[in-house]
Image (cartoon, rainbow, N blue to C red; front, side, top):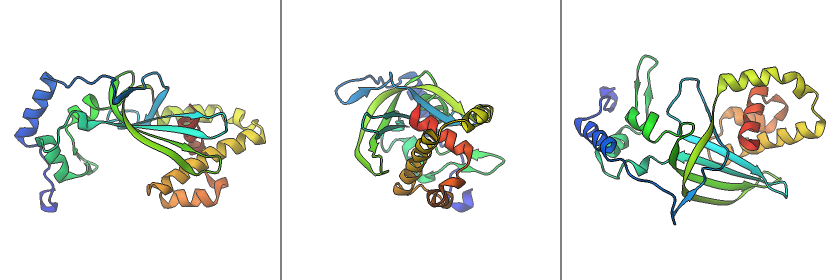
Length: 227
């Protein structure tokens, strides 16, 4: 790690800042510039044991058939002032390094798995990206703002996969119109990934060959877009 320019251990100043944060946490409440979106049906999906939840989603189908999508990102900045010890260390590391034997986190776990993590049932500050996807897959009406959110459903890949398999027989009986609708929602999700630069080569293959999309991803996309 050292040979590659990383700083694997947190400096003493970081531990001191964490102590001050625990003793005097910032008070965050809805106000003129912070919306209260705790009533929405936010959900996350990750591994069974994961506690560093940095993203939640919720979506609403509009009367005209378009989809309004909200993505909430954990607002670490609320707890970590610019140029503070934690900020400087994270700026140097830029990434959490997973070696397979030990992880070297960019942020202290007190922050990433607790204080700022979007865990279920907790009221947390978030940066929300809101946008609308037209029926043709084109994204428009985008905005970014601060909000207080509450994760209503902390889903896991294994649980969702099991439910999908159990319901597979029922899914086979769905009408052609419903299947086409679900397929479009996943197509829209993949298109968003491509437009944001996050799409993988697999995303490109699915975009050009929708029939090859796996059932698990289809189910996950419906959870994100229709929940």
